[in-house]
Image (cartoon, rainbow, N blue to C red; front, side, top):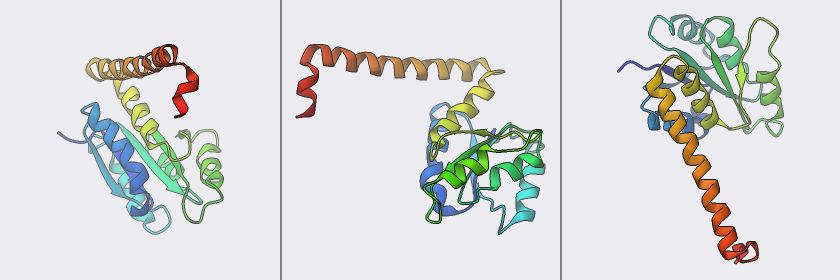
Length: 170
C-alpha cells in the first residue's frame, strides 16, 4: 500500500524519537514512510517533498525537529496537508524549549499541530485520528486502543485496592 503518513525529521539522530510515530501507525495498520528532510541542509528537498506529498497520496505529515526546529513550519508553509510537529530535545537544544516554541509559535495562516517534547507517539495517534475522521476502520482501531488505555488504568486501580498503595514501592 502507498503511505498515507509521511514521517520526516531533520537528522537521522532524531530517528530514536520518531520511530514511536511509525510504531503506533503500524499498530493501526496505517502505511507510512520515514525519511530525513532537513530544512537547513536540504531546503530544496524539503520543498519538493512537501509540495509533492499530496499527489503521492500522503494525507498527513509528521515532522520532527530539534534546536531551531524550522522543519514542521517550513513544510506547512508549502503544503495544504495537515502537519504535526514533534519538538525534539537535541544535543544543541535549550532543554527542548527552543524546539517547542519554534514549532508552537507559528504565525496565523500557517498552522502546525504541536505535540509535547519527544512525543512522536502522540503525533502518530493524532495522525491516525485525522485519518479516522473519514475512515471508520481506522476510527474503530483508535477506539479500541483508547479503551485499552482505560482498562490499564482500571487494572492499576484494582491492584492498589487489593494490595494497598503502601506495598507498591517494594
